[in-house]
Amino acid sequence: MSTTLTGVLVAIGPGPGPAAGPSLADGTLGREVSAAPVVGPAAVPEGRAASAAVPPAKLARSLAATVSFQPLEFRLPSGATAPIKDSGLHPDGALVIPDDPATVGWWDGGALAGDAYGSVVIAGHVDSARYGLGVMAELKTLRTGQVVELRAGGRRMRYRVTSRRSVPQAELAARTDAFRQDIPPRLVLITCGGAFDPVRHRYQDNLIIYAAPVPS
Amino acid sequence: MSSRSGRLAIRTVSVGLLLLASAVGTASLASAAPTSQVYIVQAIAGSTVDVLVDSSVVQAAVAPKTVVGPLNLSVGQHVIQVRSGSTTLVSARFTVAGKDSLDVVAHRAADAPMSPVVTVFRNDTSSVGPGKTRLVVSHVAVAEPADIRVDGQPFFRNVANGESLSLVVPARAYSLDVVATANAGRTILAPVQVTLEPGTLTRIFAFGSPAEKTADAIVQVFPVPVVGAGRPTSVHTGDGGQAADSIVTSRSVPWLVVAAAIAVLGLAGLAGAVLGSVRSAQTTARAAVPPAAEPVIAHLAGGRSVR
Image 1 (cartoon, each protein chain N blue to C red):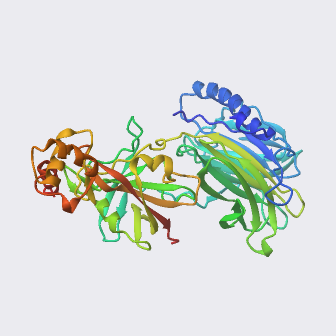
Image 2: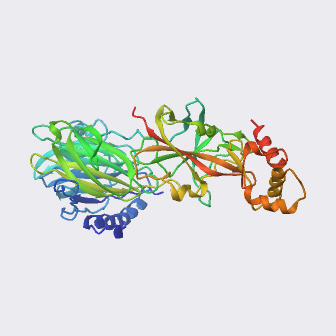
Image 3: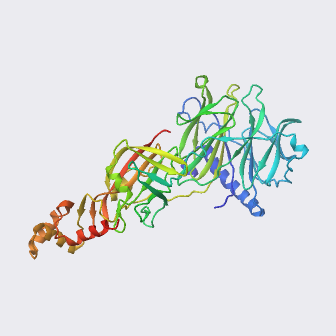
């Protein structure tokens, strides 16, 4: 992806009172200035007398730049942990799930841990014909109020289980809001549950656990 | 993009992006060495100024709420000078480290003389997820520390002059306002409606002086890469069956249907009874699956024994 950047200025006037009053229509429009590049002459050498008299510009402090993180490890109430891999989609639109059920996947189109909005979606196999029971089998016994944790290096984010839901797999995408992003932040854990069809090697249902961030 | 909103200002964002993108594309092709993208943001309310970088006039007569740039500045130190007529309002050194994107903002401090100052903000042009925007709100107003509110909710408290709030949010319309953290929450910037486009860094500077009724907002939009998968259509998370509540048989595979039927009846070779049981055997409690359903049991045991 090109790093070429463009800047655009739009001026928006202060709105009239409460949020109900969109102010864009009557705001003055900002002026766009030609993008003609100024090729910087030589940089002013460090320590030159002329520049020493000029004070350095203040560096702005960004307050939330480091709060969000991509979760790399997952911890369940039993103390069991699982590495988290970045998960995209198969060509048919199904979420890629790590084969080894000791590892879980983070849907990389969803929210980061610590984001101000949206579902952080973690999914993993409840079991596997090849490897046996998965770490997500514990979701079947998770209770409301229990705490799970997402980690990455020294960063961690805790979530308290608020509810659980079981839906037919075919209805997960269309009939639930599991992947929704325009909502307050939350963690959504997905695995399989319900009856198993040994011929299709597939469960009938998805088990969904919803959890809310615990203020740190 | 513009079809999403009939609002004049939003249309201007889209058109402006196209125009500037072509201009900048040409400029960046010409320069082989990594260069910075430096924008000068004129946030000194009430003054029209000349902007100089390294003693050269970059732009004369720059009105408030104007962004000048991008300037392709070399790595190293540079000096910005902001002049009103022959008076230098402020000058400051800033450093370009590499392929930076910087906003060099001339604004007023929150002190009594409202001293002009220069604050450098780094533009975080890293990727965002699909359908999202990085929203950065900066307080450069002549005002005390403030709460920045999004849709009426204080997302960040006690943000001082020269500080920013950075959030990745779903791209949609928001109402944004800035109120004093103390002083009974007096309004610093009255609510403004802003529609955020996906795949952008959108910067909003609250500047000017609420006391002098010059408080206003500057909006600056940068395209950023979008990284991340679309919305899944399904999630298949188990093929062993060890964790199953129960076993279902698949109608489409005759041998299994037959096996289940045999199990239920405990008899073999009664064709009529087999057919009759197919419908009722759709879901069989796992505990009730008798040994006769050999294929199912063998499969489950095989999976379970691995770990």
